[in-house]
Image 1: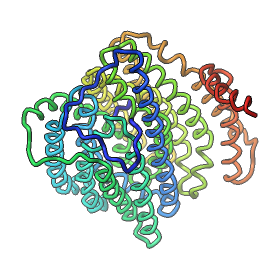
Image 2: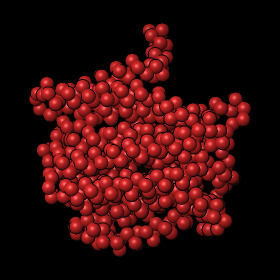
Image 3: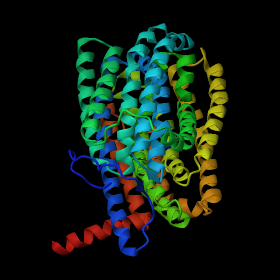
Image 4: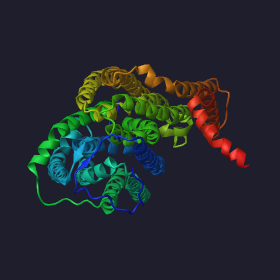
Length: 524
């Protein structure tokens, strides 16, 4: 289950002044449809660029640091980060979604929201620093106390970026966000690698996170013209509060529901298992981010524009879901096929993460469908459904993972622990996403679920076939040799099968591809 969290401009251009009230409404004349379509295409392009840039830099940095530091350091920082990210999610969901979704918005709303978020971030930072020893004691890891305290400035950094980021996302201006993400991740990654080379171990990862946050905040405020005024419009905050409270409650529920697996690992199995699991989870998460959540970032402002036209909204949602499936499902199938040799290349201590990564690709595939459901509900003002489902998922997850933790604690190796948690997460995500899809499509939008999902079937079949054949080759030992050879062969085989099957079965995709190729052939 996932929830959310462009007019093309030059990366250094400033945003448009919001002193005047802005209203989002559907165009009434046919010719006025062209501008929103161009803006949507531009937003989608830069949203993919934003996520692809983050994917490229963080993947390189993560794998370099993983090979240098090992699972234990990764597990320590992942456990501490979970503590800090809960408060960050509260800040982000309190206002970001509200600003994007709201039909009418002026500077009074932005000023009120900014000062509430900044006051909250300072209070939460102090609270988090004081509660760090309790978190360390809960996880039986006293070593993470000062790591948690060192990471608490990230809460204030998050508070600083909420409103300017929401302004850019509302206007679908993703190019400055892409530049900001690329610069911040690159600089943070360089600092982390240098500190790891010097021998700082887990503190290298802490420095990476803090530097990324500082640079990201500086760049974001540089490319945003809006500045808060020293005033607090009470009525404007009252306008925002109702939706903000629901969004925050739903956001916290979603975050805890999708991180309950790490909570259980940290509590029951220790930092090494957490480090293995986070590496197993990292690449499926990254692929889902670049292939599907890039579309999610665009979907809320685009669908909110159509909130009074449910039929048009449903058609737009179906097209977005098809794009999400075409780019996301085959990529996850290829990753699952290549998971074992990929983690083996990091070193023998990372090998237990291979099966877990394959199982977590199922979670990624489910999220390919689920990432657009939250924004669809938010766009039509039904954020309460998100909240209810998120907390239901959390409750079921607590019971499920507590049982797994009790069952395997002290009686299984790291490989079994990671695989069991990954399998439990896959089952939980699949169940809640099916329920959420039925409510979103059949109950809220009043359309058939099959009508929305049917165009994605070729991509799903192509993904399963690419993985299945490659898994058989590995299982029966048809390819022998070093892990590097297997990595290349498995990846190429899964890519060829998935790509060929998808082009053969997906008429919409093959039509688009042929539409591009024919003019090139004629020119030749």
